[in-house]
Image (tube, rainbow, N blue to C red; front, side, top):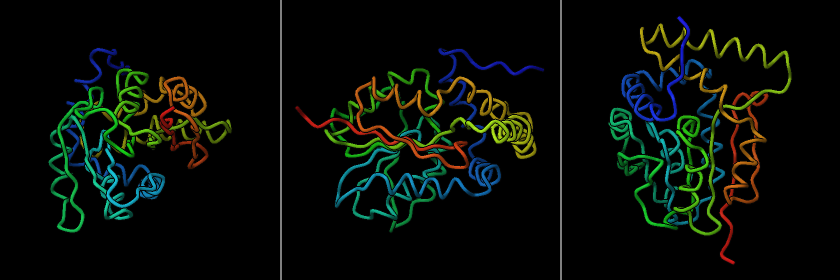
Length: 240
């Protein structure tokens, strides 16, 4: 049976429900499908924030809290908040808090961030931008809560330009990844959604252009595994 992506209006509820269902196996799934490389990429995301002293960072679509915890490992004086709309994901994230590394987690919608303007020095997001219903509005909301000269660091899938490698990656993402998901949690469509959603997601240069048009500057990206995963870094302009 052909898988059909949810429409724009259905997408938020669909994604929330699916991630709630797979929360218990989500970390294991990521470790298997990336051969553990996602942890290296998330360490890279954390380094890009460059937080100083008690500066504040918001980890959007934080899931089980990998990026938020890594930021605290690298910048132990920073103030971290994780936001996600999946209650089950947040329960797992909170269970991983320790006296040394403790993140404040909130249940909420990344399209309507429950904080005042200019609240954070950095905003991070890992594999979440692809799941929002409107990337432009999402970026504007991030821009709103960032302080002037604040930084956005986003990890997500990318597009590979080398044809042979792109073909191999497509086969892996569309055939092997859903199979792994089916073995871990039979019957869950989220493992079909993940590759299908990549088709509509902008490539690296297009996302860079969207970020610039939204109001960010000094936008650049770093590719991993020939561009299969990519990290975009963007800055909010200083006050003029």
